[in-house]
Length: 614
Image (tube, rainbow, N blue to C red):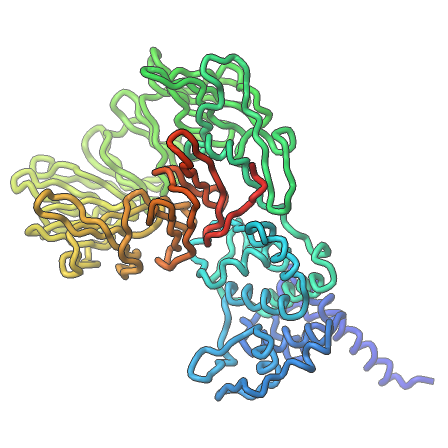
């Protein structure tokens, strides 16, 4: 007969192995934690602190423990006596370092209690997989003719924050289903990495050691064939998809992934942007002629939507069409139904506010992203845009309001129109022209404070203020405080580049008052991050990658920190302005002879990519 105490101890042991305490972990982690404990993947010391940020030492414990479970011989033969850290003698750290999973922080130190970020975790997970299996080596072997498969870029919404030393490892861990984003297609590379996140990713790493297909791998990246990519004319417009004078539809795109698969238009649709339902297609172009139609994913023209001017905006199922010989120059259509909804003289997208600014008969109003009117078209048109969801509007009686993007009014104010003329407005700031002095004045309308010690001012697209005084240029922050003395830095001009998120700083050739090339780049905190950009035809993907033509047959690609991602060298000279980003790859047109050119895809770090995409 068993003693009651032994039975109770056995029950408690079962609970300890199979069930984590609910207050120590997040709900999403329950199944992974219990499965990982069942597989003996979690060292005992980590089983009560799942919500805590993991340390460098704890990561090594997990990594070595996984390798010990999967292939003990690797661990037993991994100790390198030459590896030494002055701040730890932990055997598992030494073994992880011996296997190339981790490295020190310099000066013979390891910093065992230091926390790690998500991008650091991705790199160390990659190294753990590489140390314990041939999975990555097999994928690399498939890349002998150009980068493919799991090493192709995936564009996260916050890709600009990723450091280059972790970029490729993040791509591989994502494509193998080991480490996903943090929601809303973001990766949060600089955020801390928690123990429960580590447990989940190590469980997927365990699966990858046996069979990578055990994980929930995302769909492979898709790229339009090179002919289609060449026809894309920025945004979501297809250039010259019809032959001149032809009534037949000749556009039949193909798509390729990084694993050698080819997809037809019938399988993936006629629109290269997989998220879009409709696309504008140029049907005729010539002197005094520019016609477009709108097609759906099946390649069919949308009934009734044939314009003789151009498609200005397509958003989900709504389109703004440029129509001639009508009461208004632009009309809003529902592409699903073909219904004409309203007309206006012009319409523009305000990025920060997530609103459309539309004009009608000399007045301006605002609609949200679903084209619902939030602010009536009754305000006097001043050069005003949103910032931090706030905007200044001038009423018909020439008084002003500060409004939010939900249409609510938070303040009213007046200015002396006899003394001041409105120049620009952004958020709750407004730049005025002093009529008597012909100088610019910054009014912080929320506080009512005037800043008058500059002769000229203009807003940059990020809300900062570019100001001048006595021929010298200054950069001010949103509060009007000095952010950078551009003259003292040795430059004459500063220009904000919205697509890239940094400033271009130039010197001026006083003999002809033109900007001098090369120019340098300054981040939003006014740190110089890159010098010697040799051309103005820089292209940005809006997600942290930028490129420019650095030689006749060369493109240089760099990140949002100003660091090199890579250099693309082509066999023949590159056609000017015929290079751009397509889903993380670089599309390039080269000129073989005066009458012959060809196109290729390259990875940003320089290798040819998707080489069968011809």
